[in-house]
Each structure stands twice: as structure tokens, then as C-alpha cells.
Amino acid sequence: MEHAQTERRHLMVVEQIESRGLHDGDVVAAMRTVPRHLFVPKEIEDQAYEDGALPIGHGQTISQPYIVALMTSLLQVNVRSSVLEVGSGSGYQTAILAELAGQVYTIERVPELAEGARQVLDKLGYHNVTVVVGDGSLGLPEHAPYDRIMVTAAAPEAPPPLLEQLAAGGILVAPIGPAGRDQVLTSFTRAGDTFRQERSVPCRFVPLLGERGFRFGEPPERL
Image (tube, rainbow, N blue to C red; front, side, top):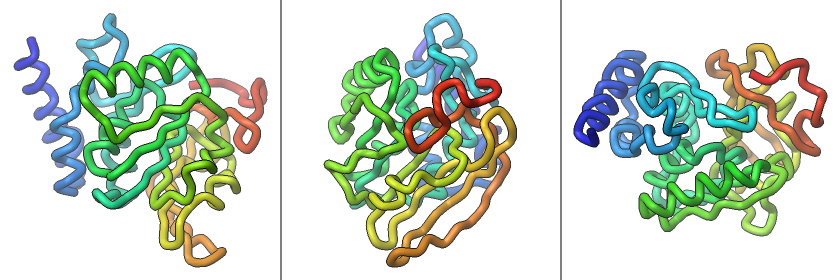
């Protein structure tokens, strides 16, 4: 069974990631390594390597593999990077980041998802990850500044607390746009007190709920 999952994972990389022109060697290696099927509910484990997002409970999703790879590539993570991930979900994107970064701090507002992610990450031996329960739109100031910040839920703008917690020359990647409709994957690179923006591809994420994201009950729908 594990051999079959490994074959499916390698096929996922070839057909969904490399075929779309993403050839970042470190990111591709991480995508080949992390067992995505361990980060989805048991009842849909057979769908883990399909080309799409999947529900993980509590109104949240695990992102499409290509989007995970693209966001990771845009973030330009290396072994010296201290990374903040906003929205742990099931922990899959966290594991991809942990393959590449020196230290990953990940914050999740749903305690059950945070605990589930922590358990799988511990089981897989990721000792460079700290999972925290809290409002991700406010970041995690106690460990700031961060070289890289990834936001895995849609925000109407880059939350100011996250921009403030970004180190000089740091990069933040987030889907920016309205809840319930298409957003745009956007990179913010810090230069002093200014931030250079680069827009990438259209995407669709669940909304970032919190004090500096969308307010609870505000989004017209949750996807």
C-alpha cells in the first residue's frame, strides 16, 4: 500500500507540477517526499494525490498540490529561513515548508486541526515545527521577525501585523481578494517600510477569519 502511495505521489509531481512548468528542484523534492495521504481524512485518502483541493473538516481544505508547490516556490525558502505559516490546516503545507526551512512556526485558529497537524508532523519527525492555536491574522509577534510568511487563507489585504513581523528583505505570500470569489496569489517583498507587490495566478481559498482578516459571519460563503 505504501509503495502504491509513493508511486502516486511521484506521478502527481510529474503530471501536476513539472508539467505546468514548475521545476524548482528543492520544492519538487519536498513534494516527492511528504506523504500527502497522511494529511487528509482517512475516508478520502484515495483522493490525496488528485489534482484539486480536498475538505479536511471545520470548513477548511487542503490546497491543490500545484498551488502548494507554487506558493512554496514563490516564498523562496532555504535552510536559513525562519518561516511563519498562517493557517496550519492539516499540516501538509507545514511539512513541505519544514523540508526546506530552518524553523517553521504555524498558527491555526481551529484547535482540533492544530492538534491533528501536530500529531502527524510529530509522527513524521519534523522537529523544526512549532504549532500554535490562535488568530493567524495577528501573526505570532513573540517569534518575529520572520524571513518568510505564508498565508494559506484569503485576506482582503495583506494583514498589517504580518507585514510588520516580516524581516528586512523578507517575503510574504498570500491569496488576496474577496471571500467566496477568485483571489490572486500575491507576493510582498519588504524593503525598509515599503513592500513591493507581485501578482501571480488566480486562486480560490477559504477566507482568513480573524481580527485583521474577514470577520466571523462576514464572508458570503465558505468554499
